[in-house]
Length: 86
Image (cartoon, rainbow, N blue to C red; front, side, top):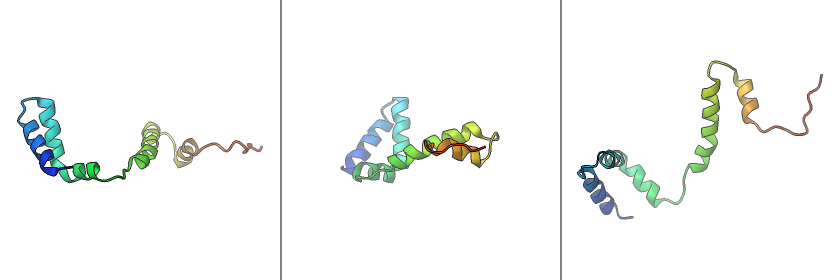
């Protein structure tokens, strides 16, 4: 990746007159180091985000309704060999 080309594109996009593109360019420019790292580096945090996102969704849905025990029960896989005992 050539940072000069990215900077030129951001500058051109910011003055393009297209509102959505100009806004996108401003956001890219604010966090340019992260954008460059995402383009240049081979690794990503996508796998971690893929695991965290469902947890956050369930937490939001359960907010104020249940405790950590129910959250744990909803997130952990079921043990097929486990039987409830009376």
